Length: 133
Image 1: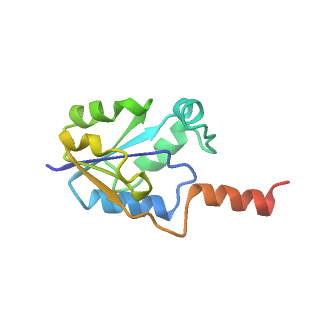
Image 2 (image 1 turned 90 degrees about the horizontal axis):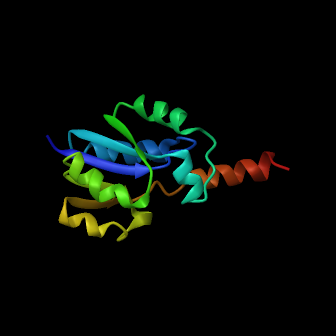
Image 3 (image 1 turned 45 degrees about the vertical axis):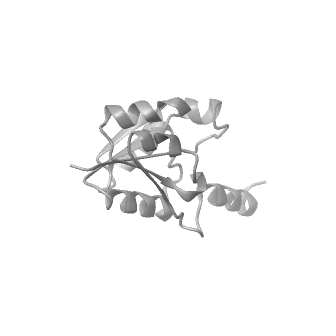
């Protein structure tokens, strides 16, 4: 069984997220999604999520491409996760190109092209511009 892993916040889930998950799952048999916790998002990434960790986790678990969702609590856990879950391929969007090459000692590392016309940041900005104060 070929195991794939990816990481993200997955707030305001959109078709760009689904494209990433679909392409990641197509690379193997079992997809682990490591979902940033609310605390990690706020304290480390300086991001406030619209949906809570539990809500985002429930959304991801409902997607047919996703086999397991686990929490991301810190930047350093990636090497541990890759080894603990016997991961064959680590997948991220190409906006992270080169940032996780250190994991190549444990597994393949693949950076997939993002869906160019959509992002959560863009959605939040447009909502603020069009409906904010």
